[in-house]
Length: 239
Length: 365
Image (cartoon, rainbow over all chains, first blue to last red):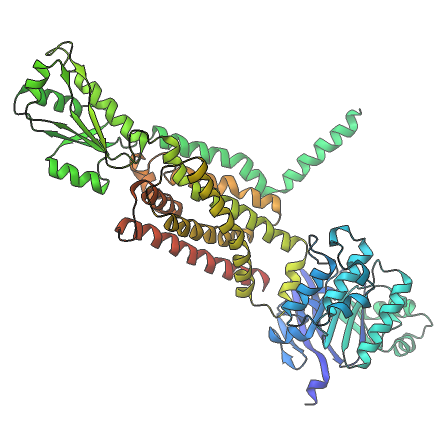
């Protein structure tokens, strides 16, 4: 079961949309219990990579294996949580009804309260989503992604519009989940967020340019700040 | 009030439409399609109602009336025996027949009042009207030979009756129609909203099967559609007193089948629209031609030949015919015509369910 210790295994995955190369032979492994940050500018291929993990993008080449299952495979998705960039919720339903629905389609509704408390929305659980603020919707969307206690959590820019205090709270929770064995893939273009990850992958023009811990990346680029490391590593691979 | 600002809005609007090819095609294409269809329906030299002439009168006057009818432009009359006429009336082949009794000549010369028997099929008021008109005109041909004769036909109806009016005729069709179209629009819009708000993406990233999504949608909207069907039916029968001699449960089952078909048609067609706005555009494209062709307003039997063929491909035609057969003629499932209607509607249901499920899969993969 050695292979199964990886939550995500991406081997040489390529995908084009017309003339645009969204993913260019990406290879990536994320072990269970790791918080992996996918760092890159807008349009770099972060979202495409995440969508390929849940079978929403069919790669033209390469293989995707999630929790030991070769994708696409529907049943394994019950053990995966996916939070889209846009807060994808039913505006006419209350926060609790939304969370309960997404729990139900993944087969678990016992974690509704826990999920809502985690994102600090338990007191607003009866509020209809249309009346919630942008930040609250993002939090509600996050609660929907983790209500079924997934073994792999995919978060596409999860902390946009979340205030700093709650961000710290969420990161504490991500850490706890990781400690319990959940692998978490977070995409972001915010550097200070990236510094909290166990390992980082730098992605640009659909290519995974570099991969490693924050320290490793800084050392590799020979710079002090992660931002500079990102810029430098991008230049190197372009030339 | 600033002309610049107003112009900015107008300009932006036109720019948006220039990008939206589909809307443009619809805006300028749909009216032509609909008007052509309507023009062809009304002026395309459609068939006139068929009727029979049963002439039992051996001598002169009967044949004068008969030949006047046979040369009439408003109906297509042909001579036949009474037994034949009765059978063809029952099968819906003719819309009515006139019976000229053996003492017709004697009667019209002596009593100064002619009372021919006119037997009407009765389920389509428009056709009945044409026949009565043609019959009364043909009797004007007698005026020269039997001046001052009063014309008082004795009319009998196979279905409906003298009080059977236009609402009774349209009511039966509209009971199904209202449900079909409202359910279609609501489903299409709801499904597009699911796509627009991103929740469809989430559903696709869950262990849900496509068939489960389609089935879940179908059941949810079917609950709504059934309540609506029951409401429409109850209102039509109890408040409007729309003519009904058939089994209410049978009407409801046919309505329910149409509702299920509408739900799935909504899911299927929503795959071809990106926005709710575009979904609404399916109304003139999908719904209006169906309304014109399904025999709701213009009876299929009097349409121009090629359109009749087209009408027989439109599933709604069978639903409308089925509802009318039940409500006006009291048809039940032992009637082969009703079996056909139910069969076609059921087949259409299955077809759109499959279509909905397959397109959903294709769009996501």
